[in-house]
Image (cartoon, rainbow, N blue to C red; front, side, top):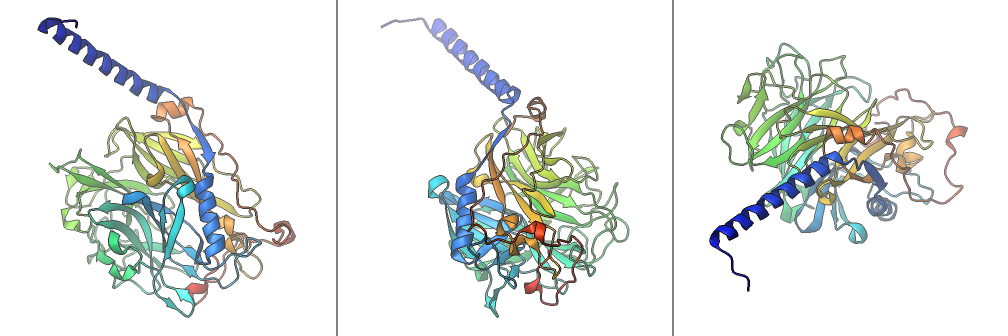
Length: 476
């Protein structure tokens, strides 16, 4: 046995530690320097959802597809507008299939073990299920709730939903009017009657105020969508588009949840602005404990919210994700730029830098095609290896105002997922030559010859009259 002096042993230990530190630094540099921007079709996930939609006669299509990773390898999917009913052998959906304003899917496993456990809706009436998450009490007539994001807290999922209400006759004439926090016990996720819906008074606003009214922060009342003022004008904030737990927190908080929101513009404008707040860990449903990032610093008041990514853009936030090197990426989509990201060194998004990742997906022959709402699926993402999903849709309809998606093609309204190796930072993304094209989707084959041929029909992208019965809405 070789015996060395304590001094030599200490010197050897120091050298070992220095070498390990150098290797760690080198690995971090390589992670950031390499440009592994690539994507592949996530066949097991796309195929699993397609098979469930075709076989079970419940959820068959929907958009947004916000995912919450659950303990035990399960995942909860929070969907916006979704269709409920069987899919034909030709990939079509029967006219009159109910549209549900929000819906949930509970899944388990990944890869070959992936399966959908259950579609979760509210009680049915007249053959049409209700949404599992209703608008908070006191919401305007004909309003609905759409999910923004969710996170596991203790023995529950806490999800933030935004209540929207129509402000005109066109299907796209709607504004956010309130936020709500929905606490869903893990032990009873499939029973919406067990959910607790808390009005989230994220600032001075009226439940029926709408967006862009009055001066910044001057709308009266409580319990509604926050009127965020300051430079850039007033607007309603759709909180919860990103939720990240952190221990690097402002205002002396030992543990917190960063809450990201999108400020809607004043009427007539189309740009949005990302804003940031923090809540003490497990306190999302207690808005009195929130702190807001404002131009004057962290404040209990949401007036004059700061804009770490700049004010007014067409960038739609989908997810905020922590990278293995300690940085953060804000993933989203843009009509002009496709799937894009902002890279930042901290969850407050200071010094964030923009990067284009992937160009907008091709239409694959779908009339009026649109891809939007890009998200990272946290249950299937580890480090820089992530699964990115996005919504697809068609804004085309036939002469009878029957929408192409999903009635003529259910796949035109089902989310698509790709496995992606994210670059370590914005510079690496630029070196990768982004935006890169996504590989074409490998969709489920349906019975040949049975589907209607789109070129033979007269497709229109104009507005259709809104039906009286929301459950029969055929054009979103």
